[in-house]
Image (cartoon, rainbow, N blue to C red; front, top):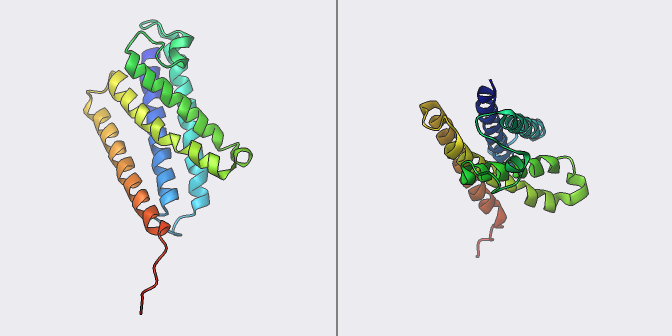
Length: 181
């Protein structure tokens, strides 16, 4: 039973993280203009991040209880401490800590200020990439076409939205020059 919980919670954690990153990019890029309330999307974005963190905690607890691979607390919480698939597990641990830091930043934003919050929030891209690589490298379902479709589709959507956000930000960052004459 724990193996099914490990797999399911890993997919749920990844899916919620991907949805949160995608929604965050949609909100920050303002692709919808005023058609959708940014405030309501921001609450959903935050909720998806919290859900992803809770699913990640479930994933860790199930891994700790599983008897097939002996994951001690150190292997689950310290990057590089796992002897089983050390690179893949390290990426998962890094993704978990980045996700935790970014998620907590929602609640201490006023304490740390907008500039620091924004800097911390950029770690969500690192968390997403690390979680994606972790899923592909450590996931026993990585060869499954549905899993590959999930990883490919979410990776592509995040990449396209990130490029669009950078391009749109570049357009608004440059003030218009007056036409001479």
